[in-house]
Image 1: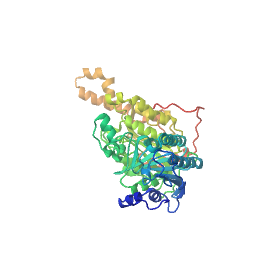
Image 2 (image 1 turned 135 degrees about the vertical axis):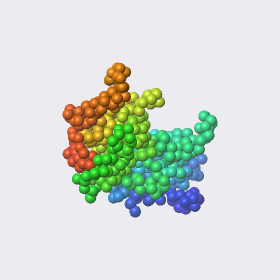
Image 3 (image 1 turned 120 degrees about the vertical axis):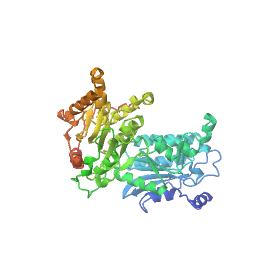
Image 4 (image 1 turned 60 degrees about the vertical axis):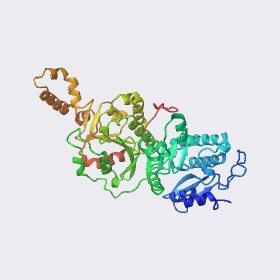
Amino acid sequence: MLHGETEAIRKRRDQGKPDARQRIQALVDPDSFVELDMFATARATGLGMEDRRAAGDGVVVGFATIDGRDVAVYAFDPTVLGGSLGEVTAEKIVKVQELALRSRIPIIGINDSGGARIHEGVAALAGYASIFFRNVRSSGVIPQISVIAGPCTGGAVYSPALTDFIFMVAGSGYMFITGPEVVRVTTGEDVGFDELGGAEVHNTRSGVAHFLAESEATCWTGVRRLLSYLPSSNADTPPVVPTDDDVERADPELQTLVPDSPNLPYDMREVVSRLLDGRQFLEVQPLFAQNMLVGFGRLGGHTVGVVANQPKVLAGAIDINASTKAGRFIRFCDAFNIPLLSLVDVPGYLPGTAQEHGGIIRHGAKLLYAYAEATVPKLAVITRKDYGGAFCVMSPKQMGADINLAWPTAEIAVMGPEAAVNIINRRELEAAADPAARRAELVADYTARFANPYVAAERGYIDDVIEPRDTRRELVRGLQVCLNKTVERPNRKHGNIPL
């Protein structure tokens, strides 16, 4: 029976779970999905496959539109051999991957699969390798999005890992290389599916996933919203969405958002949202490495990728996870012609043996590399601290930034005034009759002379010191000037990012 009412479909329906075609229909525009290879059937060469062949072979593939734009899509069908991947399953996915690449349209994969089809042996493994190869060929050419709506285990996890963004559905989606039983036998750990590789784990701890969806319905909404910010390919510019949010809009509340004390936190999300059109900010990986914010918004209708330190978490210091999170996001934006907006309030890299032994030098260099490599328009605003090596990281002029602004509250220096005075004036403080009073005087002097934006502005490292309320206007104007930016690059096969 071709796509008829099988026992597996009835059981799934009784459980309230959608099938592959229902998932695709819920994601794409109504009546836009065109299915390909619906008659493709597994070859009866695998062990025990003679009587288990079914039309479609465990995956539904085709093309459709989302908000009127073409996309390619595939969804594993768990009602056919558990959605396992065999030779023909892989061939169908590869065909739609190549269609997407030739047509320069985004591709979305919906994962709910039992993994490699054991009956077909090495042919199934070769199928995965063919898919991975196309993932890499498509990287930086077309947006690739993965949805984990069910199990995704073993080698199957590497196709989503090679794509640009991963959505995971809470309670049903999970990913891991080796399952709980293997973990128990090999390590003695007693762990469940969700604890090992559930949606919450990969959104909060591992950083594998980018979005946590509470339901499939919210997941489809999230995918559609993400695509609204992205171009169809690297040959296109991101969609421009006209806005009724005045590009000249001033925001007096930004004047007092940064606390007077440099040691008090504030929420950088509030700054970000107040600058963007309609205060709309689509944050990426909001639950992972929360000391760094990344995500998409618009300025004057144009998509921008936002990278911002978060003073509410670890004082905004950069650590291993924050470096990797921001570095990868920056490289995505650069690949797809999305300008970068950096909001800077950073005391430096996070100190400690855990960070040093974990390779903060290597991982921190990823962020440096990503900023330096990016050729899209780069705008930066220093809101408060910009100390030490972190100054070099967060998109300064010397790393190819185009427009660099600072608020009067900005402190740009090798280190904070307290630490600087303790080093520079150590002997004087030891000999002082009243060390505390003398330290206060020296800190005040250092702050006035060095820990402000004007020294950097004198040297041209900062283009302007602006009032916070005028930031949106200045950023829109700066972005407009830089939209046609071109950069000459050395002829090379590719660089060697410190992975």
